[in-house]
Every structure is written in C-alpha cells, then in structure tokens.
Amino acid sequence: MRKKLTITIDEEVYEGLHRTIGPRRISKFVQELVRPHVVRPNLESAYADMAKDGLREKEAMEWAEATF
Image 1 (cartoon, rainbow, N blue to C red):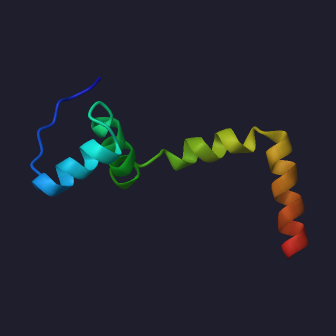
Image 2: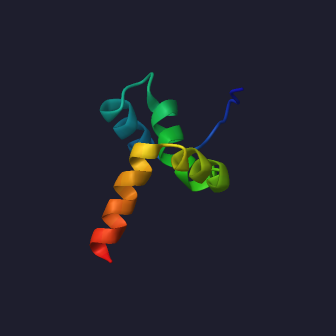
C-alpha cells in the first residue's frame, strides 16, 4: 500500500531534484534513499533463505576456508 507524504525542502534542492532526477521520478528516488535507513529486513528469514542456496553456501565455505 502506498501513502502520500508532503515534505518541505529548500527551493534550490527541489530545483536540483527536478533537473537531475526528473519531475516524475522524485518520489522513487527519495524512497530508495530512505528505505535502507528505516526498513530493517528480517535477518533470520534472509539467512535461512541464503542457506537454502547450495551453490552460494559452497562458495561461502570455500572462501571461509581460504581466508582462515
């Protein structure tokens, strides 16, 4: 679900966003910048998913053994 948010920024910053990012892309740009700071992944689930990938696990083990 999407929510609308109104923010206030400097005119100079707005013009820079409009010029650099484009008028119809500012929301996506801001969301992608902010997301990693406010949305924390479920690490336990993410690690479980990674462990199911046999090739990835094999490569990780080889790397770990080579650096040990």
